[in-house]
Length: 464
Image 1 (cartoon, helix red, strand yellow):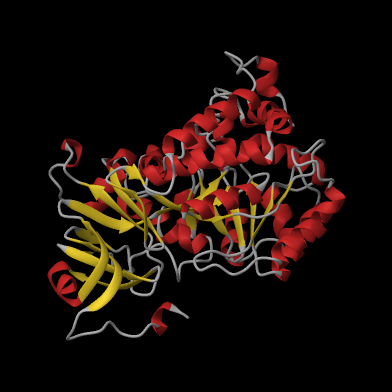
Image 2 (cartoon, helix red, strand yellow):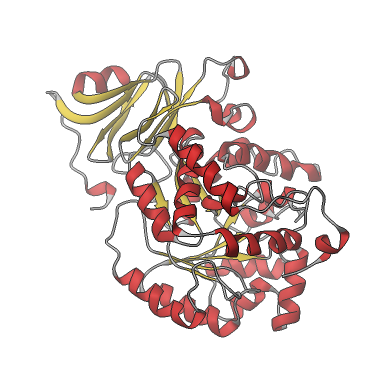
């Protein structure tokens, strides 16, 4: 059922709902940027039934559960469009290196240390971190996705993941590349549709996969209506590597193969030419912008204002907890709003644009804007409640500005996914946090190598 097909809210007598979030200011992030002061959100069966004034909704609905949001801001849950969640296992092993130096450390560590059990521990810790930071959905490219899905399902958290393709020696799952297409096809065929998600296939990049492989993976994605997600043009070194391998730049190559399109999402896209931006716009391809990771790895600053001008959908991501060291998407909102001003234009990416990148534009990048990203009747009930009682959030003149330039992930008080409260009053309700972090520490101790204290010049210059 499409959101607009929902029956109208009942009037004249009380109606039962599963959850009523009431009393706070509601930042809907709808097309008009509507704010409902002293508003409420009514939820039934995982969907938003109504958004409106708190006084009226309290009278109209009998709620099985409530969140009193007085003195708070209620907004859509944040959506992480590019991450490698179980990389929490390796946080801190590849700091102060280039992208190529990063890969030189992380790929061998993954081959040696990953298993379904370690990924399970890594993802559980990552979900705890994400829920605490107000992230309600993530697109996760990583090995052993089946283990990650099981943990997310138990926690009630929205995870989009699926088979990953990366033609490297000794992959962590031990599956030969020749067997991967059949395995991925079976995985996709066995999936049951889940509201607020879609099938996904991950093709790591044009430097770990050849043109024929990329074409076959893209065809499989289209056969199953899956989102295809790839790294592309993350830095100048990658562009040079792909050009040497295939005679074309990454985005140029993908365009020539017919892989760009409305069901393709490119991660990073930092090193782009004008012609490549035009190709991305022409094909309806979306971008996952990861400003913190790009800065930390010295990759550069993506041409997000130019992408906006061309009409490209740009969502926001954290990347993994090795390249960014954090899954703090609200922190990425701030960096996205600030870093593009460095060229001298303070309007390059405004506060509202940055917040939209982490909510409705991220949903659009995933092809799920009809279900996620804003607080509107019929959409999935993914929302967060931000405590506004903190000194750094006082006074409050503009919610977009406050979110982009002042708010922190620690200000998130409550997190709701599909109408289920996952965090209430900063306490996680669907995960045993102490146990999760203990298991993560234990798994990391066995999986992660001791990090080098500093990067050698030869490693910084190396490529994989």
